[in-house]
Length: 401
Ligand SMILES: NC(=O)c1ccc[n+]([C@@H]2O[C@H](COP(=O)([O-])OP(=O)(O)OC[C@H]3O[C@@H](n4cnc5c(N)ncnc54)[C@H](O)[C@@H]3O)[C@@H](O)[C@H]2O)c1
Image (cartoon, rainbow, N blue to C red; front, side, top):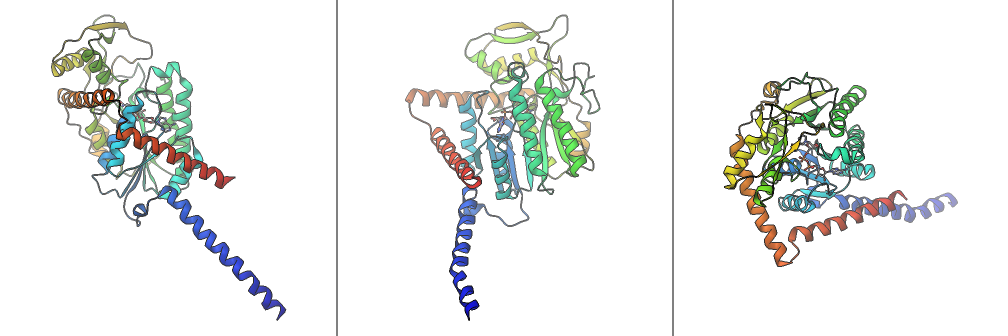
């Protein structure tokens, strides 16, 4: 009699605990997921890191046109180049139904929660500190985003062994003495700059991760990607901007008859290449592919094309070639063609034309908005995004406290 009375007294306490637990689970999961985002198993749930960046933006947008059921985009919107461009890209993604998060790759607690909330089937890791020249100025930024950030992704993926992982490497891993076209077997042990060193390190980290966990991944060595929504720090954008503004075009001059050449690759071809890796299952550790057009074009030739498409002449500012620069890049894409069916189709002149169309329109819109003095819808959305993310961060701090 006495015993049964005691048991009876615990019941309200257990019930309250259960209600609290259910309430907590609902609140916690809703910080990350809208109701419509909870999906049954079987469909693709994709995380794209660095999605406010040039390639991540195009990839995420293209994924909305595929059978992928959830596309989650994250980026720290760093100010390495024009942050407004990143905000405008991310706003386009938001409008297309992509879930966008403002977060740093190195925020392990946040990344873990993101993975737990969405149960990703695919992770496409493009977030990185890009740029060859800036790596001389600020090498630590490369260690932070490219080394630490990638390790956070690898450590988290380890807990979800069925996730398919694709990550960005770079043509920069090839050395100055690698014979052209760059074959996958060419020398990658002599990086010319810190950016290249961290990208090669990523390949080695992915290899080591695979040998210790059995989780395979696909690394992609991209070659000078260009196109609409491109990067202002890269040649096509930078040169176009200088020509339009009537400024001198900074061009590296090589001594003698040699000329600087790049394997310029149009963004749509790169996106097709990345998408093809999503259904590719590597049979060993350390798999990497070259994604380039498979042809090298001299930089003076690029300037001629830009002049034609803009209808304006370029005045050159000839500069000595810095020691960080490779003279010529040129991808051997035979292995990518064989294993991924990779077949780039966009000729440089056509790609530059599409870039110029976007460039002209985008800058006209921005100028108009600036003159009006109004805050853009994209900026308003971004301010709310930052605010919302801060709330999630605070909630996570509170939870772990
Ligand atoms: N564009 C090219 O020609 C090219 C060539 C070779 C390799 N790649 C590689 O492809 C990937 C995408 O390049 P991109 O041209 O789109 O560059 P990008 O700079 O436009 O995009 C990278 C994005 O990552 C974000 N980012 C950086 N550090 C971060 C961090 N710690 N946390 C969260 N986000 C972070 C940046 O804000 C940026 O939006 C990068 O890994 C780059 O190294 C690009």
